Image 1: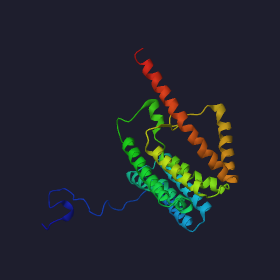
Image 2: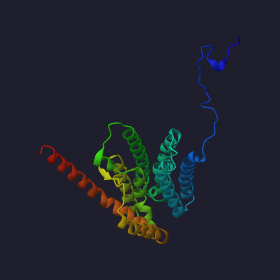
Image 3: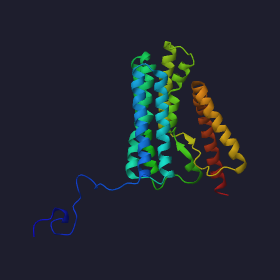
Image 4: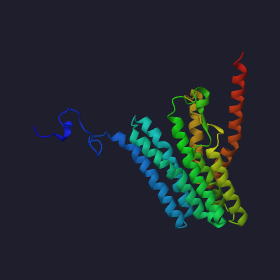
Length: 272
């Protein structure tokens, strides 16, 4: 009998195809989350191009759009029951582009370039810190012994999407009329380093994951509040983003204090 390559030399064992798994039919719903991820990468890279063309407002908008799309693709996959290992790996690789590289390069091309070498160092460290933050998140997410209960409702350090939104605060303020003086560019470089430190820190940040349901009498006010925020974002984008970033920065110490208080009360109630 001639040698059969697929039968493992007559042993009955199939040798793996080095080209990967064969082509098979895939439901369309499995493609949608990956398409959202690809669109997020396109938006982030387009934002970088627009920044070097000095079309800064549109560049920042594209980076924010990329961060938004990259933040919702996982939720879309879970809603459609279309999660896959391929999608998870692709999303993880896209995060570093949309949350780290794109915001850093856009901010550098627009503002930090005026600070010289310190501005480039700040942008570079932010991108690296974002990569470290994402790597730590992936490790913790696959850890079977990760924190459960109320601790599972907190991030360890500022999440990457929030970091991308925060680091662009100097750009928002510039669009509102703040001049690009030496002091402002220096402070922007220092602020970029601060956000980088918050990304890799272990400060507990409340995530809202433990909110499973909303009371019936709060549904309509919540919908109205979300619509109001979206309308503000459309009509006053840079005012709204500036207030959002400042409010998030103010929320960080509040979240840390709530976590410590909850932890202290748990330790006190333990012996009792």
